[in-house]
Image (cartoon, rainbow, N blue to C red; front, side, top):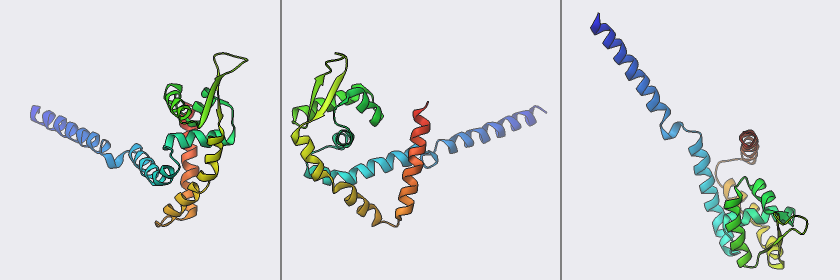
Length: 165
């Protein structure tokens, strides 16, 4: 009887360990393909960004400011889903290169407004070809426009869900 109990316990333990092991395989994680795709897409952007002297995070900040110039640091952080302590050093580097200027709000000293300089505004025309070039690169694969649009919509739904938490 004791042998039977040990045997069942061993099988249960072995089965449980196999299940845990399967759950922890990299290929079974949702996070890894999202992470890897993000890194590879950024790598595709880099040659285009290098031509205009930007990093990918700087490009994202500019995309936000080209839509709405004069945003606060907090608003930029929220749009990019980043902490302000991540965005602030990025903005400092951008200001040092003359792309943006930061100034305290006259209404509320705690708020810092970010505005594009002429140089920052001028980069918009140079950057205008980047989305098209990236699309051409991705469409050279076996992915269709419809698949890429569906992926984008799904990712937006995931982002919206996770942002509410």
